[in-house]
Image (cartoon, rainbow, N blue to C red; front, side, top):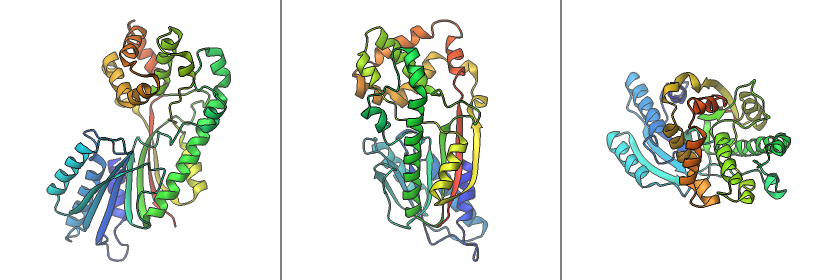
Length: 328
Protein backbone atom coordinates (compact mmCIF):
# COMPACT_ATOMS: atom_id res chain seq x y z
CA UNK A 1 0.00 0.00 0.00
CA UNK A 2 2.93 2.34 0.61
CA UNK A 3 3.45 3.45 -3.04
CA UNK A 4 -0.27 4.16 -3.44
CA UNK A 5 -0.40 6.20 -0.22
CA UNK A 6 2.66 8.18 -1.28
CA UNK A 7 1.12 8.83 -4.71
CA UNK A 8 -2.17 9.90 -3.11
CA UNK A 9 -0.35 12.36 -0.84
CA UNK A 10 1.51 13.82 -3.82
CA UNK A 11 -1.77 14.34 -5.69
CA UNK A 12 -3.21 16.34 -2.79
CA UNK A 13 -0.90 19.22 -3.69
CA UNK A 14 -2.53 22.12 -5.50
CA UNK A 15 -2.32 21.91 -9.30
CA UNK A 16 -1.70 25.68 -9.46
CA UNK A 17 0.66 26.33 -6.54
CA UNK A 18 2.16 22.83 -6.08
CA UNK A 19 1.59 23.29 -2.33
CA UNK A 20 -0.28 21.19 0.20
CA UNK A 21 -3.34 22.61 1.95
CA UNK A 22 -2.50 24.48 5.16
CA UNK A 23 -4.12 21.71 7.19
CA UNK A 24 -4.40 18.02 6.29
CA UNK A 25 -6.55 15.41 8.02
CA UNK A 26 -5.82 11.71 7.54
CA UNK A 27 -7.36 8.60 9.11
CA UNK A 28 -6.84 4.84 9.24
CA UNK A 29 -10.17 3.01 9.31
CA UNK A 30 -10.09 -0.31 11.17
CA UNK A 31 -6.69 0.25 12.75
CA UNK A 32 -6.92 -2.61 15.30
CA UNK A 33 -4.54 -2.40 18.27
CA UNK A 34 -1.42 -4.34 17.34
CA UNK A 35 2.08 -3.16 16.41
CA UNK A 36 0.91 -2.19 12.90
CA UNK A 37 -1.81 0.21 14.07
CA UNK A 38 0.22 3.26 13.02
CA UNK A 39 1.81 1.82 9.89
CA UNK A 40 -0.45 3.44 7.28
CA UNK A 41 -0.75 6.88 8.86
CA UNK A 42 3.02 6.91 9.44
CA UNK A 43 3.59 6.33 5.71
CA UNK A 44 1.24 9.25 4.94
CA UNK A 45 2.93 11.61 7.41
CA UNK A 46 6.40 10.72 6.14
CA UNK A 47 5.24 11.33 2.56
CA UNK A 48 3.86 14.76 3.49
CA UNK A 49 7.15 15.74 5.16
CA UNK A 50 9.24 14.34 2.28
CA UNK A 51 7.25 16.18 -0.41
CA UNK A 52 7.38 19.39 1.62
CA UNK A 53 11.16 19.11 1.92
CA UNK A 54 11.46 18.55 -1.84
CA UNK A 55 9.67 21.80 -2.65
CA UNK A 56 11.42 23.58 0.24
CA UNK A 57 8.19 24.52 1.99
CA UNK A 58 7.21 23.93 5.62
CA UNK A 59 4.87 20.95 5.99
CA UNK A 60 1.19 21.60 6.66
CA UNK A 61 -0.43 21.08 10.03
CA UNK A 62 -1.46 17.43 10.13
CA UNK A 63 -4.27 15.78 12.11
CA UNK A 64 -4.08 11.99 12.43
CA UNK A 65 -7.05 9.83 13.47
CA UNK A 66 -7.33 6.10 14.07
CA UNK A 67 -10.70 4.37 13.91
CA UNK A 68 -11.98 0.99 15.00
CA UNK A 69 -15.02 -0.51 16.69
CA UNK A 70 -15.67 0.59 20.29
CA UNK A 71 -14.57 -2.82 21.60
CA UNK A 72 -11.05 -2.30 20.27
CA UNK A 73 -8.29 -1.88 22.87
CA UNK A 74 -7.38 1.77 22.29
CA UNK A 75 -4.98 2.07 25.26
CA UNK A 76 -1.87 1.08 23.31
CA UNK A 77 -3.16 2.94 20.25
CA UNK A 78 -3.36 6.20 22.20
CA UNK A 79 0.16 5.74 23.56
CA UNK A 80 1.47 5.03 20.07
CA UNK A 81 -0.28 8.10 18.68
CA UNK A 82 1.32 10.27 21.31
CA UNK A 83 4.74 8.87 20.41
CA UNK A 84 4.06 9.60 16.74
CA UNK A 85 3.06 13.18 17.56
CA UNK A 86 6.17 13.75 19.67
CA UNK A 87 8.32 12.43 16.82
CA UNK A 88 6.77 14.66 14.15
CA UNK A 89 6.40 18.36 14.87
CA UNK A 90 4.03 18.80 11.92
CA UNK A 91 1.41 16.60 13.63
CA UNK A 92 -0.76 18.99 15.62
CA UNK A 93 -3.65 16.73 16.62
CA UNK A 94 -4.12 12.99 17.06
CA UNK A 95 -7.16 11.08 18.17
CA UNK A 96 -9.16 7.86 18.15
CA UNK A 97 -12.61 7.64 16.59
CA UNK A 98 -14.55 4.64 17.92
CA UNK A 99 -17.36 3.46 15.68
CA UNK A 100 -18.27 1.43 12.61
CA UNK A 101 -16.91 2.72 9.32
CA UNK A 102 -20.23 1.70 7.79
CA UNK A 103 -21.58 4.82 9.54
CA UNK A 104 -20.60 8.50 9.43
CA UNK A 105 -17.45 9.21 11.44
CA UNK A 106 -16.22 12.69 10.42
CA UNK A 107 -17.67 16.07 9.52
CA UNK A 108 -18.63 16.89 5.94
CA UNK A 109 -15.74 17.80 3.62
CA UNK A 110 -13.11 17.67 6.36
CA UNK A 111 -10.82 14.74 5.47
CA UNK A 112 -8.03 14.54 2.88
CA UNK A 113 -6.99 10.88 3.02
CA UNK A 114 -8.50 7.64 4.28
CA UNK A 115 -6.52 4.38 4.53
CA UNK A 116 -7.76 0.94 5.48
CA UNK A 117 -5.93 -2.37 5.48
CA UNK A 118 -7.75 -5.73 5.55
CA UNK A 119 -10.76 -4.35 7.43
CA UNK A 120 -13.35 -4.12 4.65
CA UNK A 121 -13.34 -7.92 4.42
CA UNK A 122 -15.48 -7.75 7.57
CA UNK A 123 -19.14 -7.08 6.87
CA UNK A 124 -21.37 -4.91 9.03
CA UNK A 125 -23.32 -8.07 9.86
CA UNK A 126 -23.99 -11.55 8.56
CA UNK A 127 -26.61 -11.54 5.80
CA UNK A 128 -30.00 -10.88 7.35
CA UNK A 129 -31.80 -13.04 4.77
CA UNK A 130 -29.88 -16.09 5.97
CA UNK A 131 -30.48 -15.39 9.64
CA UNK A 132 -34.17 -14.55 9.15
CA UNK A 133 -34.83 -17.74 7.17
CA UNK A 134 -32.50 -19.84 9.37
CA UNK A 135 -30.39 -20.90 6.40
CA UNK A 136 -27.02 -22.12 7.74
CA UNK A 137 -23.86 -20.80 6.17
CA UNK A 138 -22.27 -24.10 7.18
CA UNK A 139 -24.04 -27.43 7.60
CA UNK A 140 -23.10 -30.69 9.31
CA UNK A 141 -24.25 -32.57 6.21
CA UNK A 142 -21.75 -31.77 3.46
CA UNK A 143 -24.16 -32.69 0.65
CA UNK A 144 -26.87 -30.39 2.01
CA UNK A 145 -24.28 -27.68 2.50
CA UNK A 146 -23.15 -27.86 -1.13
CA UNK A 147 -26.75 -27.65 -2.35
CA UNK A 148 -27.28 -24.48 -0.31
CA UNK A 149 -23.92 -22.91 -1.01
CA UNK A 150 -24.86 -20.86 -4.12
CA UNK A 151 -27.70 -19.26 -2.13
CA UNK A 152 -25.39 -18.57 0.81
CA UNK A 153 -22.63 -17.09 -1.35
CA UNK A 154 -25.10 -14.83 -3.15
CA UNK A 155 -26.46 -13.58 0.19
CA UNK A 156 -22.93 -12.72 1.33
CA UNK A 157 -22.17 -11.04 -2.00
CA UNK A 158 -25.28 -8.87 -1.69
CA UNK A 159 -24.37 -7.95 1.91
CA UNK A 160 -20.89 -6.92 0.78
CA UNK A 161 -22.37 -4.86 -2.07
CA UNK A 162 -24.71 -3.07 0.35
CA UNK A 163 -21.97 -2.44 2.92
CA UNK A 164 -19.30 -1.30 0.48
CA UNK A 165 -21.67 1.14 -1.24
CA UNK A 166 -22.56 2.61 2.15
CA UNK A 167 -18.86 2.87 3.04
CA UNK A 168 -18.13 4.72 -0.21
CA UNK A 169 -21.08 7.06 0.25
CA UNK A 170 -20.05 8.09 3.78
CA UNK A 171 -16.39 8.55 2.92
CA UNK A 172 -17.27 10.67 -0.11
CA UNK A 173 -19.32 12.94 2.15
CA UNK A 174 -16.43 13.30 4.60
CA UNK A 175 -13.64 13.89 2.05
CA UNK A 176 -12.66 17.23 0.58
CA UNK A 177 -13.06 17.63 -3.17
CA UNK A 178 -10.31 15.57 -4.77
CA UNK A 179 -9.68 13.66 -1.54
CA UNK A 180 -8.26 10.15 -1.69
CA UNK A 181 -8.74 6.67 -0.27
CA UNK A 182 -6.23 3.81 -0.33
CA UNK A 183 -7.71 0.44 0.67
CA UNK A 184 -6.61 -3.16 0.85
CA UNK A 185 -8.83 -6.18 1.37
CA UNK A 186 -8.88 -9.92 0.86
CA UNK A 187 -10.31 -11.11 -2.43
CA UNK A 188 -10.43 -13.97 -4.84
CA UNK A 189 -8.93 -14.56 -8.27
CA UNK A 190 -11.06 -13.32 -11.18
CA UNK A 191 -11.29 -16.89 -12.53
CA UNK A 192 -12.07 -18.43 -9.13
CA UNK A 193 -15.55 -19.90 -8.76
CA UNK A 194 -18.01 -18.14 -6.47
CA UNK A 195 -19.51 -21.51 -5.51
CA UNK A 196 -17.11 -21.97 -2.62
CA UNK A 197 -15.99 -19.89 0.31
CA UNK A 198 -12.25 -19.33 0.41
CA UNK A 199 -9.47 -18.26 2.70
CA UNK A 200 -8.83 -18.98 6.34
CA UNK A 201 -12.44 -18.85 7.52
CA UNK A 202 -13.37 -21.86 5.34
CA UNK A 203 -10.78 -23.91 7.23
CA UNK A 204 -12.12 -22.56 10.54
CA UNK A 205 -15.62 -23.75 9.59
CA UNK A 206 -14.35 -27.23 8.75
CA UNK A 207 -12.70 -27.54 12.16
CA UNK A 208 -15.90 -26.39 13.86
CA UNK A 209 -17.90 -28.92 11.80
CA UNK A 210 -15.74 -31.74 13.13
CA UNK A 211 -16.28 -30.45 16.68
CA UNK A 212 -20.04 -30.36 16.09
CA UNK A 213 -20.14 -33.87 14.60
CA UNK A 214 -18.20 -35.14 17.64
CA UNK A 215 -20.58 -33.42 20.07
CA UNK A 216 -17.97 -30.98 21.39
CA UNK A 217 -20.16 -28.05 20.34
CA UNK A 218 -23.91 -28.00 19.81
CA UNK A 219 -24.99 -28.78 16.23
CA UNK A 220 -27.70 -26.15 16.37
CA UNK A 221 -25.18 -23.54 17.42
CA UNK A 222 -22.87 -24.58 14.60
CA UNK A 223 -25.65 -24.20 12.04
CA UNK A 224 -26.52 -20.74 13.39
CA UNK A 225 -22.90 -19.53 13.18
CA UNK A 226 -22.18 -16.93 10.52
CA UNK A 227 -18.73 -15.47 9.89
CA UNK A 228 -19.41 -11.88 8.69
CA UNK A 229 -16.66 -11.85 6.06
CA UNK A 230 -16.60 -11.84 2.27
CA UNK A 231 -13.88 -11.89 -0.38
CA UNK A 232 -14.98 -10.19 -3.62
CA UNK A 233 -13.43 -10.45 -7.04
CA UNK A 234 -11.81 -7.42 -8.63
CA UNK A 235 -14.72 -7.27 -11.10
CA UNK A 236 -17.15 -6.97 -8.20
CA UNK A 237 -15.11 -4.14 -6.70
CA UNK A 238 -14.95 -2.20 -9.96
CA UNK A 239 -18.66 -2.68 -10.57
CA UNK A 240 -19.69 -1.50 -7.10
CA UNK A 241 -17.38 1.54 -7.24
CA UNK A 242 -18.78 2.49 -10.64
CA UNK A 243 -22.41 1.96 -9.56
CA UNK A 244 -22.03 4.02 -6.39
CA UNK A 245 -20.45 6.79 -8.43
CA UNK A 246 -18.64 8.88 -5.79
CA UNK A 247 -15.08 7.84 -6.73
CA UNK A 248 -12.77 7.37 -9.67
CA UNK A 249 -10.56 4.29 -9.52
CA UNK A 250 -6.93 5.40 -9.87
CA UNK A 251 -5.41 1.94 -9.35
CA UNK A 252 -6.68 -1.54 -8.55
CA UNK A 253 -3.90 -4.06 -8.05
CA UNK A 254 -4.26 -7.82 -7.53
CA UNK A 255 -1.65 -9.53 -5.36
CA UNK A 256 -1.22 -13.31 -5.14
CA UNK A 257 -0.02 -13.57 -1.56
CA UNK A 258 1.19 -17.14 -1.94
CA UNK A 259 4.27 -15.98 -3.80
CA UNK A 260 5.30 -14.17 -0.60
CA UNK A 261 4.79 -17.20 1.67
CA UNK A 262 7.48 -19.79 2.22
CA UNK A 263 5.71 -23.17 2.52
CA UNK A 264 8.25 -24.22 5.11
CA UNK A 265 6.86 -21.53 7.44
CA UNK A 266 3.29 -22.87 7.16
CA UNK A 267 3.04 -25.02 10.25
CA UNK A 268 0.23 -25.80 12.66
CA UNK A 269 1.36 -23.25 15.22
CA UNK A 270 1.55 -20.41 12.66
CA UNK A 271 -1.88 -21.15 11.16
CA UNK A 272 -3.54 -21.49 14.57
CA UNK A 273 -2.06 -18.15 15.66
CA UNK A 274 -3.53 -16.54 12.53
CA UNK A 275 -6.90 -18.13 13.20
CA UNK A 276 -7.00 -17.14 16.84
CA UNK A 277 -6.04 -13.55 16.09
CA UNK A 278 -8.84 -13.21 13.54
CA UNK A 279 -11.62 -15.45 14.80
CA UNK A 280 -11.27 -16.26 18.51
CA UNK A 281 -13.52 -13.39 19.68
CA UNK A 282 -16.49 -14.38 17.49
CA UNK A 283 -15.99 -18.12 18.14
CA UNK A 284 -15.93 -17.63 21.92
CA UNK A 285 -18.88 -15.22 21.77
CA UNK A 286 -21.00 -17.78 19.91
CA UNK A 287 -19.83 -21.13 21.32
CA UNK A 288 -18.31 -20.24 24.68
CA UNK A 289 -14.86 -21.25 25.92
CA UNK A 290 -14.02 -23.87 23.27
CA UNK A 291 -10.68 -22.67 21.94
CA UNK A 292 -8.58 -25.34 23.66
CA UNK A 293 -10.67 -28.02 21.99
CA UNK A 294 -10.57 -26.09 18.72
CA UNK A 295 -6.75 -26.21 18.84
CA UNK A 296 -6.74 -29.94 19.67
CA UNK A 297 -9.15 -30.70 16.80
CA UNK A 298 -7.02 -28.72 14.36
CA UNK A 299 -3.82 -30.43 15.53
CA UNK A 300 -5.43 -33.87 14.99
CA UNK A 301 -6.64 -32.78 11.56
CA UNK A 302 -3.14 -31.79 10.49
CA UNK A 303 -1.19 -34.54 12.26
CA UNK A 304 -0.23 -36.27 9.01
CA UNK A 305 2.81 -34.97 7.14
CA UNK A 306 1.82 -32.42 4.51
CA UNK A 307 -1.89 -32.40 5.37
CA UNK A 308 -1.82 -28.77 6.53
CA UNK A 309 0.02 -27.58 3.44
CA UNK A 310 -2.44 -29.45 1.23
CA UNK A 311 -5.45 -27.92 2.91
CA UNK A 312 -3.97 -24.46 3.07
CA UNK A 313 -3.01 -24.68 -0.60
CA UNK A 314 -6.59 -25.35 -1.71
CA UNK A 315 -7.68 -21.82 -0.81
CA UNK A 316 -6.29 -19.03 -3.02
CA UNK A 317 -4.85 -16.14 -1.08
CA UNK A 318 -5.42 -12.91 -2.94
CA UNK A 319 -5.41 -9.30 -1.80
CA UNK A 320 -6.46 -6.14 -3.61
CA UNK A 321 -5.08 -2.67 -3.12
CA UNK A 322 -7.28 0.11 -4.44
CA UNK A 323 -6.60 3.82 -4.83
CA UNK A 324 -9.69 6.02 -5.22
CA UNK A 325 -10.20 9.73 -5.80
CA UNK A 326 -13.39 11.56 -4.88
CA UNK A 327 -15.23 12.32 -8.09
CA UNK A 328 -17.77 14.82 -6.85
